[in-house]
Length: 135
Length: 135
DNA sequence: CAGGATCCCAGAGGATACTG
DNA sequence: CAGTATCCTCTGGGATCCTG
Image (tube, rainbow over all chains, first blue to last red; front, side):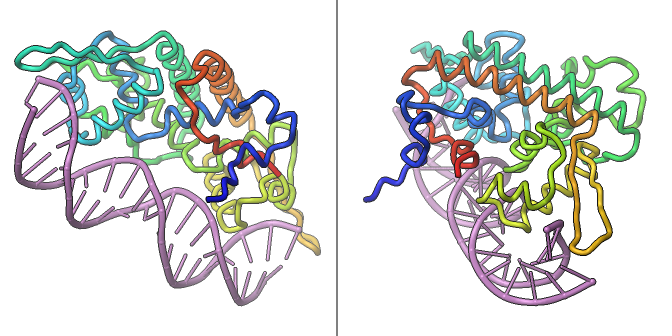
């Protein structure tokens, strides 16, 4: 199959770093996913088990939570500790880079506060996260 | 179970309205959309016309560009100047709150740079934005 | 030039059920 | 307890064509 990869179509200066990724997009890639940010937010307060995350987010199904945790783990954003015992026990925790990513989310929070205050009635979207946060 | 939700941890003035919005989600709501951030990024350099945005992002179709611009406009993130003349001319520009939102995107960029450097081989996603940025 | 109107589809994510 | 395995739904965006 013809590999017409994106990288190959880039100008030379973009290729000669072996791999030059757009940083903004890298961040988007890591954060995209309905529950990723919310999960990271939960892990701010420390190590959490699978079940604890489920309790914190009652509306997420195990299947989805599992996949989101997997991509976050393979991305190096969170770490996964497995205790081989009965019953099983698995703990998730923010990595160093994960913690710095939460800082970015905090920047979003700060902007959001300002935005909500200054847009008195123009923006009245239903809040997904209120939904996620509720219960 | 004690509700220690994110909302409850916000300042009182945010809670007193019957509608409590999650700031993080408000930001997500504003930014969600495949091309929103990219558009804001383009507008960093100043006022741009519809056609100029299209040139900068050849892969976006007029229909999509139009809708994304509309939601950004109604959200107060960008402003729209219509010149009633023939041929038509419309200019888009970041608002004040829009410029501060770009700062958030910059935070994402900064984190992304760090992330790419420190994850030498773990994260090799294809970069959507390279794609979007190219051409 | 700057878009609206339609139609269409992939793919993220939900529902449900099962298991090491 | 901490997930998998299937199946299914729904919607954001792309393709295409049209117009004030």
